[in-house]
Length: 145
Image 1 (spheres, helix red, strand yellow):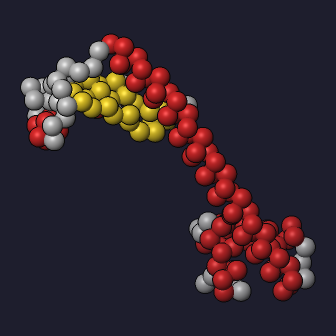
Image 2 (image 1 turned 90 degrees about the vertical axis):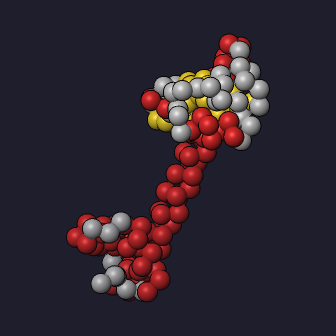
């Protein structure tokens, strides 16, 4: 958000002097009033809900309250979507590691724990993410150089 504020109201982009580069460009787009509210969850900034109007001084105190309610709902939705995406990435990574373990188990006659130890050690020794080591092993049938 601009200057770290949670809410920024620009009542008239045609006359606002706080943002001498941004305001005239926005006014040229026929957007005369802008109300911006930070989207955040768990202390993490997720984005900005930005409302605009073609009329100057279009936003009233009630509009600010409604924008904050909308921002809270949008923040929850964004945080949930990010968490879900992260969980799916973790599941995909776990599948890759499992497949790579299977390749090592079959090839070298070792158990799953030993295969995981080999993958993890290779990952650490070569500073390569475990997921990437597993993917390369699956693709090439050998550990990366």
